[in-house]
Length: 326
Image (cartoon, rainbow, N blue to C red):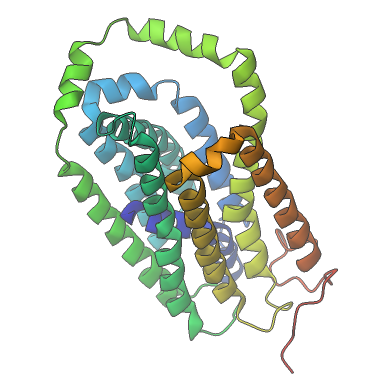
């Protein structure tokens, strides 16, 4: 959770922060550096998942968690003194580290679960994961709540926000290093058969099965939705300061809190009470989630200026006029 408090909040601010730095200092940092950073992270993460399982097997769960989380700390520290080449390098390292981190998280969860409680444990893990959005959003709300709705995040706010987030990431690194090694991990690797080459081949064979191909469409939609709310939507809120009656940066914080509450509610409904909800089958739940996502897209399109993702300080009209102060 400590890592996610920092990582998710940083993602929400990456594009507005890089744009603000450019407009304030006329630096060489591209205005869309935040978008480029996210593209590098997810692109590297995609391909790194192919080599993550062998690395986790070599390092074991605990040190894989430490290595993966350390890349989050490295990228977070970069925002204290934003530098374009280092930003992109650190983004690539975080993408690699994310693959190691989430592979080891899943493996550690499986080693500490049984068939009876794995569903419950997965839901609890996801609830802790998404609670970082709530706590991070509350922190940003406190920081931005008394500030002017200016074009940029000022230097004092930058040092406070990213200094705290870097410190929180370091705490997460230490916590991972102190995790106990489950006895089942030793037994798992003693019983392990087959080479990593064979595992890689079996992974590709699984990827081209009919079920995997069909599921890839849902995964692509979920990935697009995540990219939207974590990057595009938060940026649009921050850049629409002339469209709303409240400080646009506090809207970013409230967006983080709202998303966190929604994800925890869904995890509780479809995870902790999975036996009740799954009697309808998984397919209706997935379709329902996709419909909710489409509705969110439509509402965002109606409530935000068309050029909000790219134009800092946009004055373009919206289809639905939000309340304005007088």
